Amino acid sequence: MKTIYLDYNATTPIDPEVLNEMLPYLKKHFGNPSSSHIIGKAAKEGVEKARQRVANLLGCEISEIVFTSGGSEANNMALKGVAEALTAKGNHIITSQIEHPAIINPCRYLERKGFKVTYLPVNQYGMVGPDDVKKAITSKTILITIMHANNEVGTIQPITEIGEIAGKYGILFHTDAAQTIGKIETKVRKLKVDLLSIAGHKFYAPKGVGALYVRKGLKLEPLIHGAGHENGRRAGTENVASIVGLGKAAEIAAKNLKKYQNHVFNLREKLYGGMLDKIDGVKLNGHLTERLPNTLNLSFEGVDSEELLLKMKNVALSTGSACHAGHKEPSKVLLAMGIDPKTALGAVRFSLGKYNTPHDISRAIETLQISA
Image (cartoon, rainbow, N blue to C red; front, side):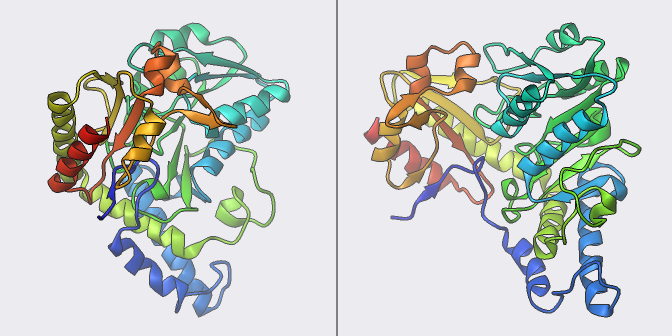
């Protein structure tokens, strides 16, 4: 039977429109964007068109977009770039306990370099408190980095409120928006952020491409040194075809946001309702309303999520648990939310996308009912 894909928060397939836009840049327009001849200029035009499309999606200027190899590089560029640029001003960074490893591990790296990092707690819904952010600020704080929405439970953070606090104290504010691009509005001015990271493969663009929004006038130390690509902010010949794909995906996301939201929200509610009707001991993890429209994280009482997924051979899902040398560990995100380890080990994340259908959801419910 056809596998039902319900793991869109992990990665998405490339949209056919995106692929079609990319193909000429893998064949005809193969030039180096830095070359001054006609072949190079065609590639350069593709890159700049993509930059405009990403800027339109984020509501910023084209000069504020830096293309990267993905969300992880964008996060590293933001954190390490700010840290090195503002060392003379301070050495304190504020983040949360539930950030993606692409934030946590750069923070750990910076701690080894002498920086101080505060890892804020979250409430039972996985939400950071703006008051906690304010209380954590010191005279040495140079950066606050809080994810726009959590990848496991989908809880949307109060980014605008935190941004207002950061602005009041003159502190730079970064958000990892890998999970929110194309799912909810991500206008940088409304969010009041100075830096914002995106990953192409989370919204139907290729893997290996992303971008960092850098507010105009903000100086970062480059993560990759070399020639003067990306206005001197990121060395390396541009991945033209993938950048073009990212731009097309951004255009589609901006145009179809409401349609996407309605589609995945209705399917998610159908899935959740079916689980509650047919399976006992189902618990929702995450905020009831302030949550990504496509994300549903559930714990099943008395069920080991890894064993459950092995039984559900025709459904592609993920758990929040980690397995090290045969020893399963509950999700750090769920533990930070105060969920007991046993319940956390029974958690499964359903993340829906634009290619899912009502039939997919009905089949998933039936399969889960049998497996659980």
